[in-house]
Image 1: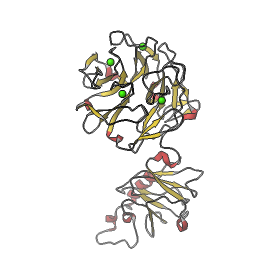
Image 2 (image 1 turned 135 degrees about the horizontal axis):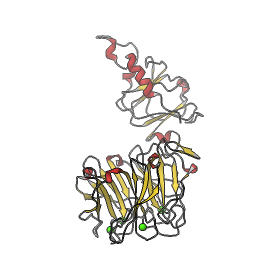
Image 3 (image 1 turned 90 degrees about the horizontal axis):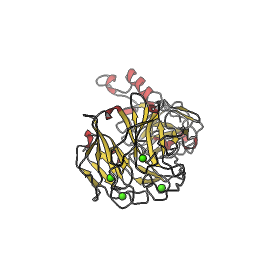
Image 4 (image 1 turned 90 degrees about the vertical axis):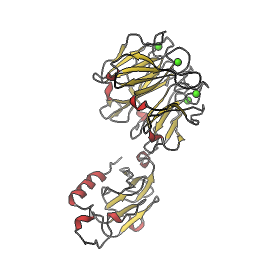
Length: 410
Ligand SMILES: [Ca+2]
Ligand SMILES: [Ca+2]
Ligand SMILES: [Ca+2]
Ligand SMILES: [Ca+2]
C-alpha cells in the first residue's frame, strides 16, 4: 500500500502559508477557488499544486473520472470516511491505493503523489482501500471443548477484531469475518474475554468505557454475536490496568477477572458470581505487577486442568508462566520465554487453534519484529503449546498477514 503524502505536503503548505487565507492580507480576496471552498462532507481536488483554480468535488465513489482523469494535483478530504485514490479505473492500480484519513474539519491537504488518479472511493477504514476490514483468521477444530476462545461453539477458536471505525468483527476461523458490532466500540479502552460469566455456557465479552470508567458485560449468544450489555462495574475501573478475563481461578467453575492496580502494583482477582456479576475482590499479588506490561490468560498450559497466567516483564522482555494452584492462587513462576517478547504488540489467548487439544498462544507483532515469512508490524505469530507450560518456537503465519491498522484483537 502506498502511503499518503498528505501530512508531509500539508506541513510544506503551512510553511508556505498556503493554508491560511489570512496571509493574503486584510481585504484581499482570492480570485479563484481555494482549499477553504471545499464543502464539509466532500472530497475536493484541483489541477494546481496549491489548491487554486477550478475545483472538483464529490462525496460518492467514482469508478472513472472523465475530464478529471489524471488531473488531480492537490486534494482535501473533508469527509468522515477514508478516501482511497487509485491510478487506474474501477478502484485498481498496480501501486495500490493512496489512503487519506477522515478529516471532517478539513485542516490538512496535499497532493495525491502524482497526477495519475483515475478512480476514487470512500470506505470506513483505511484497510478497505486495498482489502478487507478484517484480517484472515484460520484455526483448526480442536478435539476438546476448551470452554473459552470459542464464541459459536464449533470447537474452533474465534477472534474478535475492533476496526478503526469502532466496529466489531467476528472471525470464526475459516478466513472469513462477520460484522457483529456496527459501531461505538471505539468508546471502550479495554476489551477482554475468556469463558462464561453469565452461566449459560456461552463465552462473554467484558469492556471498559473510557469516558465513565464503567465495566460492561456483553453476553455471548453462542453464534458470535453479543446480546444487550449489562453493567458489572459502576465506575472507577479507569484506575485499573491490564484488565484480563481469566477463566476460573477460584475453583467454582465460574470465570473470574484479573486487574493490576497501577498506584500500588497489586494484582487483584474479581471473582465471577452466580448472578453474572463480580464479587468482592481478593488480593492475588501484593506488589510488583507494574513490572509486567502484558497479562495473558491462555487457559491451562501445564496439563493440570487449572487455568494459568502468562505475564510479560517490561524491562527484560521475558515471558513468565504463573501456574495456578488448587487454592486459587499462583505457584512459583516459570520462565517460558527468555527475552525478546517486547516485539509483540499483543497476545491472543484463544485456546487450542492448532487442533491437538493443547492450548496455544498467538501474538501480533510491532514494527521491530523480524521473522521468516513476515516482518514488521501486523504479523501473526503462532506458538503452539507443549502441554507442559512451555511453548514451541513461533511460526510467523505468512498466510494470515496484515493484522495492522486495527484497534484491538481479542
Ligand atoms: Ca468457533
Ligand atoms: Ca455467557
Ligand atoms: Ca471462579
Ligand atoms: Ca495449569
